[in-house]
Image 1: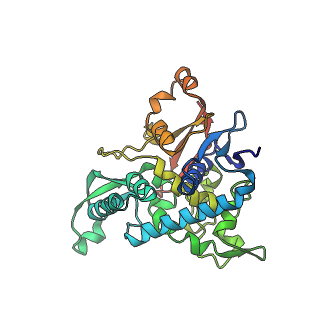
Image 2: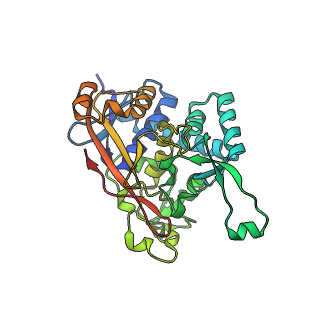
Image 3: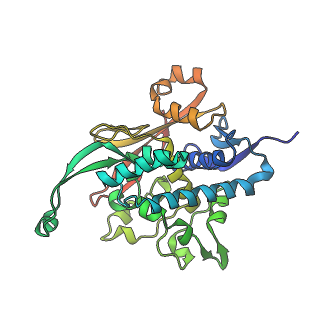
Length: 326
């Protein structure tokens, strides 16, 4: 009898980017095969996807590419704002209404996680904008996890929309595309920067991976121009992984698994041993009280819990620091 699971050694659950990417891969797989479930190997913490046989890795990559392309289309066709931390209320409301009408789990997941219409605040224009006659307006706050990309954390969606085009490139004389980058996520990671690619306009690195933390580069006059080492396929999947983290309608836009300590955001996530589907994982992540306590977590099959802090530089760059077990 064939094994009904695929071991993904490249997705180490102790790495925040790999954790988000594994969730994104599950979301992709469940669109094709609803019985798909995810768990984590005891001790080594790598992801294990159930409901797929090892010989179906190519089909799994196709499912991931389809989901990424679909998400890009949804965000483009609905004109969702590229700037996440501060979203105008009307586009946010329209995006949520369109998600309800479509009933697409991907669309609904993006609507509930990227921003929240109920988390509003009064946005004030800067001095230059005031001279141009720009008036203060009410805006919706975005997910705290969406802030971990380029300086200011603003262009995650705009960059994500470009993934299929940017990743159709050449590396070491070999033609690459989105599927090849997604497949590369399954095994040991090989880091590249945009300087390695021929014709890449901007290499997508959202700074969810502690390996992307280069403090010296963030002190430069234009750190956005630096080529960060990154795993493009993992970054693409991680955006889909955001759909598991609901943003609550509170003044501070509380995001599941994200809280603050010493005025810094911190991201805390569990690794579970029993295969769980999308709905069960969403419930688990929202109810952190079930797994923060070491005594309670073992009763529900949570083997480990990891945490990482998010550092913000003087110029507004955000990045995750190394994770640690709690």
